Image 1 (cartoon, one colour):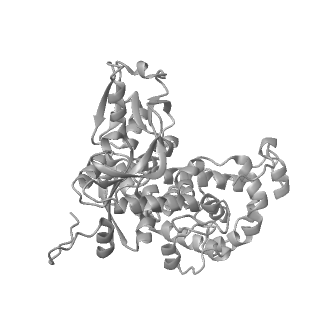
Image 2 (tube, rainbow, N blue to C red):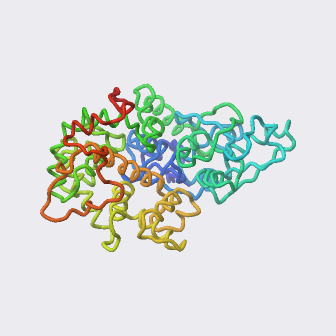
Image 3 (cartoon, one colour):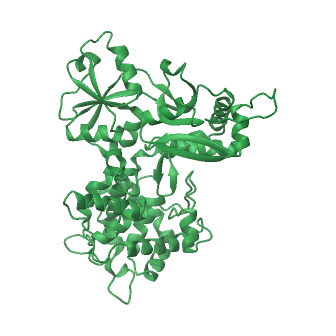
Amino acid sequence: MFVVAFVTAGCSRPSTLQEIRSEGILHVVTRNAPSVYYDGRDGPTGYDYELARLFADDLGVELKVRVADDNTGVLSVIGQDYAHIGLAGFSDHPDFANRYHTVANGLEAESVVVYNRDTNRPDSVSDLEGQTLHLVADSNHEHHLKQLRAENRGLQWEVHSGLDAAGILARVESGEYPLAVVSSNELDLNHVFFPMVKSAFSLGNPHDLVWLFPAEQDQTLATAAKSFISELRASGALAQISERFYGHLDRLGYVGARTFTHHVENRLPKYENLFRDYASSYNLDWRLLAAIGYQESHWRPNAVSPTGVRGLMMLTRATANHIGIKNRLDVEQSIQGGAKYFTIVHRKVPERIPEPDRTWFALASYNVGWGHVEDARRLTQGAGKDPDRWMDVKEFLPLLAQKEWYSKTRYGYARGHEPVIYVQNIRRYYDFLAWMTEPTQVAETSEKPWFKDLEGMEKIIGPGGASSKQEIRASLPSELGFVPPTL
């Protein structure tokens, strides 16, 4: 409990806000979830975490984060006044009125019924009677279901204390759970990973997602947080943070071939020589280096994320310092840094792993970090599969987003779906670039390059071959022709 003792009789207790500024620390309790908090490639991140970090900066104090196992843990810590703020992605509802102070975080969500597409779609609450809905523990969904049960006596559900939203969705995907209820924002963030999961209908209207403050606190901290978030909304900064986490969810899918073709024609020529030069310096295929750059920034040299990753190759500050890059927004330095960093992570992959798998592991490591890749490899081996084979390991990387699995690993939670899709995207971009370039355009090296035999990366040309880049591009199907850029 955060208490300041006063020796002098008659002194009134300082406000919560004064205590925090005196101690110099804002204590936050949260849980691992892509919608709230997670340890990403660039360090801690997540919508609520980013807001809390900015709020602590605004108060001029240090942010200290404690990660609870689940919603129940967050509620317990806040209920006992052991943290200043609880971040768990809760929707506001009347049950909170006497237990916590709440402040809206700028997002709304609703409880959504989801089902496996191989089962019949329920169209209304009455269609759910006699079936079991599955949901995480201490969620807002149970509150909605209890209200609906007054008119739907056959409504029943099962709460799973050991699962998070990703775990619930994974079981709907497999068909183990035909029906479930999840928050709309968590469904949005995870839906691309579970194509067999479909949304049926919402159990009610959207509600504000809120931060929780202990009831024993006075209102000073909650008032300051509410004012701060209002200022972010007015300045447009809140929309920018929301855009980062919710505005580009399709980034994990394949970018349209027509858009990519347009960018190859209009953006790539500006940087192609740099990709060639630095790929040659590090014994890489320039097209692979260019494909990484496209996945990272869509070849935008001034790209900057809210978490500080920037430049055409989207290098973190720590990475840039480590490899000696002084200006990440300088195109040449960024491409050089990307080539050098990829070479470093590629060398971390055990030499016994043959190509192309060694490259796929290196790309995954470039995205999520080698520690998380190693965790997935250990899970793969534990399941009796080959940890040195990408096609096996990519099945286990997504499990790092589920508590029942990441709790058993050394490096913990990771958005394990992302490196899988990251690798697949880059492979596709490379295929396109190999298709649109001549064999003689591959950067020449004194030794046989390690990428020479990469799976699925052969140059694709028409039956009669082609004698020039222009002829190859002219042979593209009409639907892959010029289109306005969308990114």
